[in-house]
Image 1 (cartoon, rainbow, N blue to C red):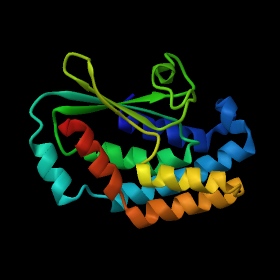
Image 2: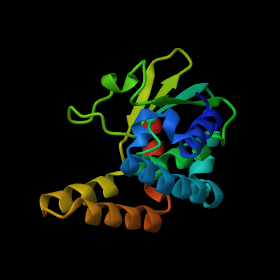
Image 3: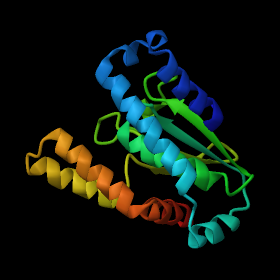
Image 4: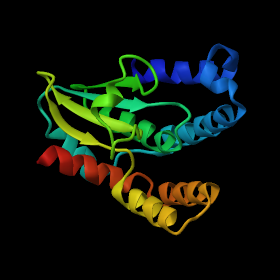
Length: 184
């Protein structure tokens, strides 16, 4: 689906959770409500920085950015709007949102340490060949996550620290990582 279709899907979940079995679970529904707010904030506030804009201007071939995600995913609430806005800088880059938990289950080809971690960004060239794969979160955030997990921190504390990391970083690291992947 397009990013706009994804936003409509997200909104439909919030307005009609009874039509979406996963979101009839109140915990998933509450995560999704919070993620909608986070995503809206990034859509209003995030703009790719000058270095990334200059880099993306050098991309001349057509690319497809496939983002594998789900509305309940906390990391996706930060990364997906940033990725969509980064891709929107260049008309020859299209964005395709694939839901992790729905067919065709593209996630099965992009596992992280054997798991279905999201979001995952797959960047393909105009011939459909993978140029790069990124995800599920920026390295600094992943390092923080693993450190807190090793320390035995409670999951709610981990989520809070991850949230602080994203708010402090403001999308800087994700831009650097995508640029580095595409410059290889």
